[in-house]
Image 1 (tube, helix red, strand yellow):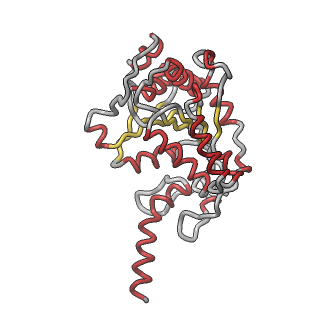
Image 2 (cartoon, one colour; image 1 turned 180 degrees about the horizontal axis):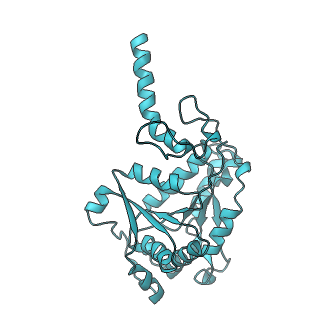
Image 3 (cartoon, rainbow, N blue to C red; image 1 turned 180 degrees about the vertical axis):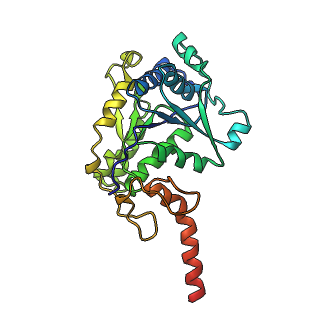
Length: 273
């Protein structure tokens, strides 16, 4: 099993859109304030619109650290675009969206964006979002399962937004596609039973508490080692000896290099057979 990360940073996956419900916007605001208060740096997708803009602006407003990872193609196109039709609901949300003190790291592809976010973070939090958010959340859950990392994945189930995903996971367990113990590879924070209270609920503190409660030693991952002949679980902060690749963390370094290594193995086998 991969050792737990020693990073205090939190990667937040969420929409570049605002969504139609005030509770979604206020949950993003709450999360940003809580991350700054807990002195946990934010790592996110680099947008300044939608829930991305709210959570990052809220961290900045409280004096916290923010790092956005953005692919070159998106930056060149003018940044993330709002894919929905939500509107700003409160002055507090409008205020943080006007913040522009965001530090960006530009990468070549969406794949690199996800790796750069994941290697910097010790935990992941999902706010409501669309296809991209779904894909990012499911990927880091799967990485827990296959021993790439051992990090909490917390889903803020504002207005039961992620309840269909929980139902899908449980259906996978029932039908034999997901091992029962792997249902806990992600944690759902449901908030108050009455949805009327979701606007005032402290989603940010609930996320911080859920991260702290993550039971690293209870994760039963598949025994894959993601670098050649190397047990990455013994070196959660190990540096590679490949020029230009130092600083990659454990299994994530292996993930990036695996395809190239497999090609070399395939060609060597082909020549000798």
